[in-house]
Every structure is written in C-alpha cells, then in structure tokens.
Length: 391
Ligand SMILES: Cc1ncc(COP(=O)(O)O)c(C=O)c1O
Image (cartoon, rainbow, N blue to C red):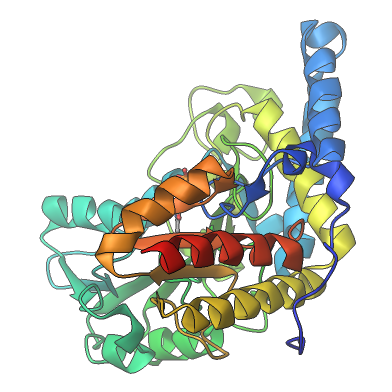
C-alpha cells in the first residue's frame, strides 16, 4: 500500500452518499462513522421486512443475513467464514475471549496503560477472579515514545495473552500485527487484537500476520451502526477455547432445540449464544460491502494522505502532534495540542463553524475518512489559523 505525495482534492467515497457533509466538516469517525445512504436505505428496507415477523422474516432469511455478514467480514480481513463469529459489540467479543482464555494465578496478560478500557477491563476482571497478573506497558505519560520493544520487556513464558488495539483510539498509533504475533508466539501466548479503530480504514490480513483473534465493532471506520461487531479466531483457537456463555445459538444444529446436551458449533460461531441484533447486523453486512467496494487499500492511502496534510498544517501553526508521523506507525487518527490558552477558543470556534471532532484528554482528535477531501482539512486549518492569529 502506497502513501500519496499529496492529499486528495476529491473524496474517495461519493459525498452525495453522506448528506450530513452539506452541513458540517466531519472529522470524528474515531467516535462514530457516518452511515452512507446506500447502507442506510438497505437497513431501512430490512427493518420493513423484519416488521411482520416470520411471515416475511423466516429462518432462511435470518441464516442468509448471518452468512452475508460473515462473508463480508471474512473478505475484509482475509479470513475463512467459519472462523468469524458475529457479536453485539467489540467489548462483548473481548470479554468472551478473556473469560475463555481465563489466565490462572501463575499467568500474566500484557497490554498498555492508556489502552481503550474495553481492551484491558475484561482481563482485569478475570484477573480479580483468578489471581492472574495484568501487566500494562507505560505509555500514557509519553505516548509518542511507545514501541513494541517496551511491550516485549513485559512478556515472558508465563504470558497467556497479549491484548492491544491495532490502531490506538487517541494517538492513532498503528502497531505492526506480524511483529506482535511474533512476540506472542515466541512464548506461546495468544495475540488478541482490537481492530475497532482500523477495520475498514487499514488493510488487515489475519492469515498473513498470523493473528489468533481479532475483534471489531461496526460503527466506526466500517460506517455501520452500533450493536454489531465481529470476532475472528483461528481454527485452533476456537477449538481450544471454551466459550464462557452457551445458549441455543451456540450449537451445531440450532433447530434441534435439545435442552439435555450442548453440541457446540464446529466453527467460531460457537461463541454466538443468542439471537443476533438483526438490524445492526444488516448494517454491518452492507457497510462492510460498501467499504470493500471502494477498496481498503485505497481508503488507507486516501485517509493517511489527508492526515499527513493535516499534520503538516498543524505543525506550521505551531501546534504539536500527539500521534506519530511516520509509517508504519500512522493511521487516519491525528490528535493535536496547542498552548492551553488557545485550546478552549479553538474548540469553541471549530464547533461554531460546524467542525465535528473530539476533544479528548489534553488534545483535539481529528479522524479523516473516505468521504473527506483536502478542502475539509484546509477548512479546519483555516479556522485554527484565525483563532491563533487573534490569540
Ligand atoms: C479500540 C476500541 N475498542 C472498542 C470500542 C468500543 O466498542 P463497542 O462499543 O462495540 O464495545 C471503542 C470505542 O471507542 C474503541 O475505540
């Protein structure tokens, strides 16, 4: 995948698919993606079909919905459909993985201290029960200094799992998945990746990078709606891990409805224990299809081109960039900081001019996606310049 020399004049996705863009500059996909019109229509039509119950929405329709969602996800991350489970949230998926893995009192789990909480909490909660140790690499004080070497210092032969985000929700740091897999597998640990901030924006190939488990929610870079997510597990992993929950959907033949014994499905979907959230799932299938049609490689090139131009502009204005600037550590998320005195004014001015972004911790987080164009970036920089010149 190549990085462009210049940020693209035009958006990659048709702007007409995102009517909100007539009213605002949207730079907040890291919080919530905006749903493309074709996806929104697809979800609305599906809701109509779902309304009259089994008269229209029978088991075959439901099965085909799940199959479509699994097929889209599998294409997106280079997996087999059989190795994909459909979930309601990324948090649920990591929770299930942590409880399945259930590291014991002698074991440890490695992550980072400023991860998104859903990456560490499930392990901290399991550790309360089992006495396992959760080791968090120190990165909060100086996010730019973080490297995989820092993580490696915490890993030993008692490490049961390494659990991290592919792209960090705040700094935008993107980690090298193959390198992480090498680190985990050298000690026989499981590598669990949260791709909620990358799936749909950064190319992922789970087979090539030898990841054990990878989860993502649907409502950020995939531009779906909340309530759907997926969990990929390598075959050896779903066979080995015992799901913490079981229900009528966990079984090989759900139609059998046999309450006397559990025959877990011979696939990752053994983790699916309940009726799925049909409407968000339709959104996931459609939005993954939308992203695949544009091409994740092209989206990555487009987005990082915009991010690079934004970084250049912020540095010219005297701002600092919390996110690293060079490949392979970059992504579409850029968090910037300005002298505190100007920051409140910047937040106010950007909000008044309808720029949607996230004020997080001490920084302003901007996330650029397929529907953005260089004009959006210049508009934000222009508003910032106006405020800073007055300050
Ligand atoms: C890295 C990461 N994981 C998980 C989540 C939350 O996902 P969900 O709401 O599906 O549990 C977020 C939301 O910001 C996130 O940034």
